[in-house]
Length: 473
Figure: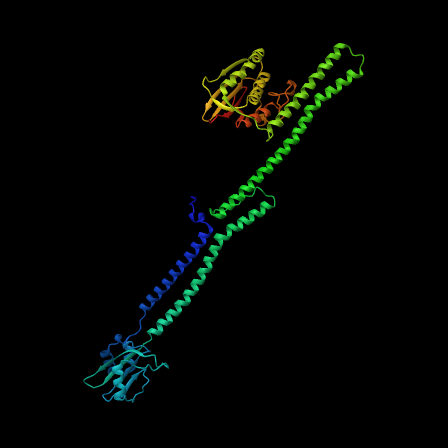
């Protein structure tokens, strides 16, 4: 189904109300014009029965042939008309619907007035102002008779009646239309407001996953977007807070676990040396080495925790200096070449000869990249190859640190940068690691406005990819 955009939804509320009233006015004028035009067409089609429709000669002949009533019937004379047949003395000798009975004689003055003023009072009317619209006179030379025919003027009354009925119909149609239009306008304005109220009510009750759905793009649409964004941010804040709380509890548990083992060993062997006076010098030295080793583990863990906390702190601002990242990596690798060779590993370095300027901190970036190199040396194994490659892509410099060692289990990849995450194939506390190296690396790279991740598509070993923005200056 094609979704056709409705531009009316983008109009602000004040303009929409103005257009509603303007549209209502136009429709009212249209209904009024249509009603008037219909009324006029109806009037035009009506037969008013004028005297011009009467054939006086034929009527006169039929009166003498069939009589007054039969002749009027044959000629289609309507009941609201009257016919009088007068002799030469103006005496009524026959009539149809006339107020004058047979034998009535017009005075000459009265008859002359009828002829001159061209009107006649209708017999059924009590209102003397209701005059005959027209009449016609036929004079027979053979008999001297006068045929007087007239149709009462009901045109004005008929028009008034038509307009009265039209006005009533207009008012009824207008009321019906106003009700329908008001309902439609109410729906177009009130429905989105009800949706907003309903959505806000749900959000206020803690349902922060609620999203208000209205299609208006005006002030109501802007308000809807603001409420949805607010709800989304609250939901994200709650999620991050819950996640932070969960990580805090897990961190405390992991710290307790990682400190418990070396402290237990330290306490146990210290007590043995203290209470067992018969220990020989060799055994005592062995126990002291164990105490020293575990003390270093505990101290390293505490130092790493302190450093991670310091790096993650919002108050800690790392001072960055613009320098050539290629030269920085070359200098850094010099300190690890001997250690790589001592572990019977190979290395391949692909570093551009041209300068790539980045804003970096020597101290922190050395620690971040050093953690990855040390991990590769510790866990890859002999005869493996460490590869380090630097490339430039758009506005970032990409640093690849790759080895073809035992790699990392796929189910651990997504959590590898979390504190105290260890796997049998990657990091193990028996090697002396604190489980915070990669976490510290990620925190440092983030402070450089960059990112670091583990490539999940490497067939053998592991590949860490670091991207750092190139200096804009």
